[in-house]
Structure formats: structure tokens, C-alpha cells
Image 1 (cartoon, rainbow, N blue to C red):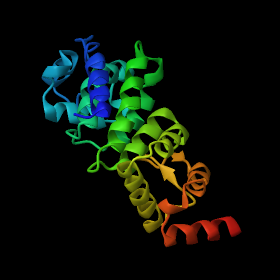
Image 2 (cartoon, rainbow, N blue to C red; image 1 turned 90 degrees about the horizontal axis):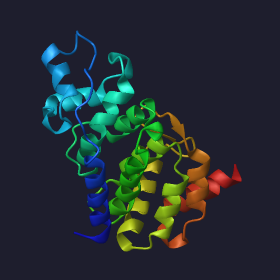
Image 3 (cartoon, rainbow, N blue to C red; image 1 turned 180 degrees about the horizontal axis):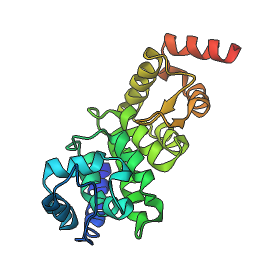
Image 4 (cartoon, one colour; image 1 turned 60 degrees about the vertical axis):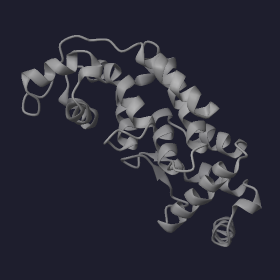
Length: 219
């Protein structure tokens, strides 16, 4: 286990220690049985996988007190998300965290610690999808700038390969310069991403990247 992975592991453990059974969960009776609502109010670790994934995806208006429910499920959801065992799009989880106003939660700093630790662990992992993780982190925190800055400062071959692959992906799908991140494409980041790419070392940019920059800045 690398140092970055150990940091993530410790951050997840700290967040796990906040998980507790909660008040009665009141939600959509068409989507959930009384037994399922009772399970969601019990110990988060005992919520069945299918039910956990369903609750993670549903719109906030399915619940009377969505922020409280999501705060209780967040430790388990974030562990599964960051270890790639969650069958829900991470970008959707980010949108739901924002809807639950996670920054106002008691011990919100522990959620932030997990997000902060996830990024270096991602950049250290050659099998990770850095573009997807960046989208999740940017939407959850409302900005891509600090994550892009940390990416530039991570001067490792793995992190740099992630940069090249991500820019290739953005250009291939014609998502620059009008780039929006998130499950709902709710976070516009085109200008900050374009400025970030322009400041990257030339060795990280292929011919297609340089041509895009020349065209974009001539325009």
C-alpha cells in the first residue's frame, strides 16, 4: 500500500467512526417498503447493497429529511466510491452530496479529508480513471481549480500519463472549450481548464493538444 493509499485508508476509517443508526427514515412509499425504510434507519453497515445503491441514486425529494439520511450513509458510500466498489456513478454521488449540503454537516471536515486523500491516491494509481474522479471532486467542492493545481504539482510519470489521457478524452469528445463537469453537466469549468492546459509543460501535450491551444487562443 502506497503512502497516498494509506492516507485515504486512514481518512475513511476516521469517517467510518461517525456512522450511527439514526431517526426513523420517512421516504417514498411507492419506491420503498416499510422494512426497507427501517433498514435505512439502522446501522449503515447493515443496509443491503441493493438498497444502499438505490438510496444513493434517488432524487432528494424522495425523502422527508434527505440531508440526514445522506449524512448517515456517506461513510459507507464514500468508502465504496473511493475503492471502486460502488455501482453508482461517482458524479451522481457528488451531486447528491451537494444537495445534502455536506459542508454544513457535523464533522464535515472528515468528508473533506476523504476527498483530499482520494485525489493523490488516484494520481498514484495507473488503473484509475482520473477524469472521472476529477469530475466527482470538482462537483462535490464546487471548483476544479485546486484539484488541477495539485495535479500539476504531482510530478510523477503516473500522474502525467493521467493528464495526457484526460486531455485526449476531452478533445476526442469535443468538450473543450465549453467544458462542463458533473452528472448533470452542472459545473462549467472550460476557462479554468483551458488556462490550466496552456500552463502545462509542452512535453505533456501532443500535437493535437498544441493545435487546439493555438486555435483556441487565436480565437
